[in-house]
Image (cartoon, rainbow, N blue to C red; front, top):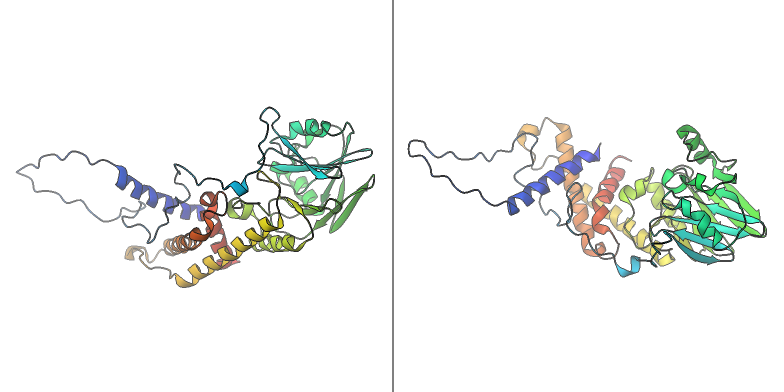
Length: 365
């Protein structure tokens, strides 16, 4: 079922309520003695917002309603500032491994005796990647690892120049071949389950753990540095991007996060936000997903389809279930807000998305 329609219903209802609170009444015109006063109809017009809003509607504006001011970003979710003149920040992860970030996207590179291995090329700052590398070494870029196929993480590959060996999982190669995008050159080396890159005494272990965010999305481990890179699954200190970061398999994404929490790393590179992650960050996101799943499940089981629906719409199953799903999500948001609204940055931005996505996942998957 298309959730965009649900979002629109909520948005229109909220806008209708907002207009009713803020619109100044028009000056009353004197009634004409020869004509009786006409009483306005209270019946809802077909397709228009209902006069009665959903019960216990959260104060957090639903999707489609512009928010005047979002919640402040908690201090713990922030990272070091980026020099605007450079457009990126370089972070030493130890023994030749570095993270590059613009505090929105993140990539890595590993320096060895004869060259440099780059992991991901976000277009946001890909043109600056050679400059970032040049701060550390003048060695050439010899290898490039694709974390997965999404363009926002590897679409800046051409900015590296040269002809590095490109390594990716088989599913990533398949998707890139299908997409035929010149900004994402096809890999020259592919693997199915595991691949170890050893160059100049440095090592990166690549492994595939199945579909979650996207087929082909891999774990990249630097065991000597105790660094793990997994893109678009963990978001240190932040509410995940909408709909579980647009995960193709929501339950698979939750399972991979659980797996990440159990692995022996010390620093996590998640591909987004302003800082690297810790086990405490991952544990908090695991806890949030557990609460989200429970809240959506309880709302599904305690909400009945058809309650409060206009009797004239009872022969319209789409309308009945649209209303049902909206009420489930309202309850889900209300359940989570007291605990989580101040713990995760951008909670108010994407909580509606997460509740809709979890409701749909539990109901039909």
